[in-house]
Image (cartoon, rainbow, N blue to C red; front, side, top):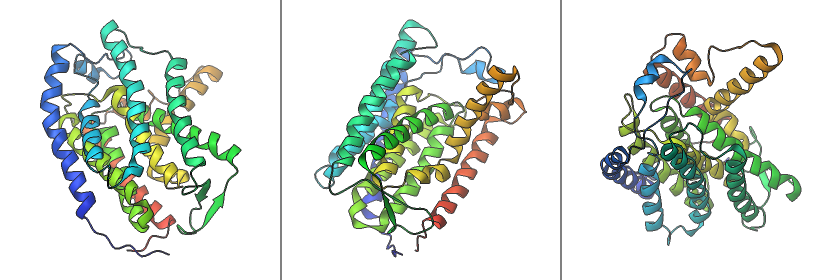
Length: 331
């Protein structure tokens, strides 16, 4: 079991710099989005409290994507291995940006059709997973839970590639579904990326992942200043797809896709609630939840948005601690 010596110098500086840049970018981007009338559309069958959100600027993921790109560029020469992770994050964000742009310019709830969006995400995922699979320094093994970071299971390439593409596509869709309450997706992703920053302190070979995780976490915290209740801006698919890509790539690179079942428990439950709701309605004509994803169910039960966010953040922290135990990390 590896011992971890925690030094906050490099990653803390990157975290703070990304956070500070997001605070600078936010007041610049939000008025531009307002001027362009890139406002959020609200589903008619959603919670009535969300109707006041109509017109709130969307595509706000730009607020943390720009700082992430800038800070990653600053640290690129020291951590060039970050490039593939940034590639997926920005690539997924670009697909989301196109989707958002179509929505706001054509004033409709749907942007890219599902097949177009999936094709874009699939293309980016395939390039990244192929890079990982055929990189001798990374390999196709995964870390086993409850056995420590040094115990891995080697997967054949023909299993490893489709499995990890599925991980990336599932994760980005899960984060997208979670992004429905002020501060929820950004806050949970902040916690998850801090978790990965801690885990990657275990081995020097993961220093670039530690740096990337810290950068994304800083961007999320900066965005939360503008996205906390009542939100001044929404991240849109531009942000949610990008964050899903960031979380997914870190899980794949660190050989821990299974850990997303723990640290990403809220993502998982939100996605499961939608699947259960759809299957139940189509097969029985009945709904299990008052509304899906799950955060809307609790809202219709009378929970305030801040309570939903607070509870879901707390659950994420608890499951991150469980994941640390499962990995047998020693401090």
